[in-house]
Length: 227
Image 1 (tube, rainbow, N blue to C red):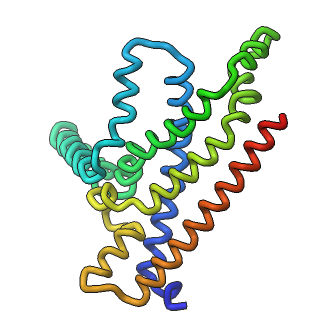
Image 2 (image 1 turned 135 degrees about the vertical axis):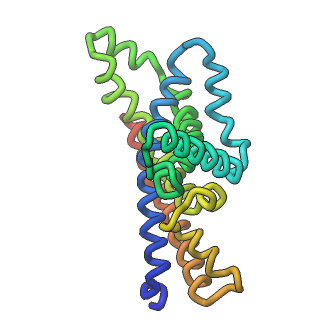
């Protein structure tokens, strides 16, 4: 029970959940739109933009964190010296943490949804459009229900990646540290029973969450196949 009486760890848990929920929501929304864009649309420099989209997969999280921090600091200094604006969001804190995590987690979400969208029979959309349905209604009632299992799976992946992220977050976090950062500061001088207990609890929760997500995806896929 000492785990739940440690104010520092509880604060880190709340911050991690707050960041993970925001990152999951933003990356799922952007990733879904990006999947439609790259899979169903044709435009100039498509391959270039696709390369830029997947680039964060090969860039270390440390580099992403340092680069974003350097850019935000330079922009904040410029705005303060030139316009007299003190933009707090450009200082290390939760806003930069969310931006930094979204910059690479969105890529994972996009790739997961694209993999499902490649299997979609577009003749279903064309039939609905020929019958007079609007494009947005076709997407809402036909395409998105088909993509629901992959969207749920991508959101689960995004949540887990955000919750456990350390490398990128380390350079962007301010006074409100996430749980991984909080645990890191506690084990500098050696592991403690509380840290070990929290680690075991996190592993158990993540495993249960992964099993639950797999079960939900199986059910959604079965429903989609029957319909």
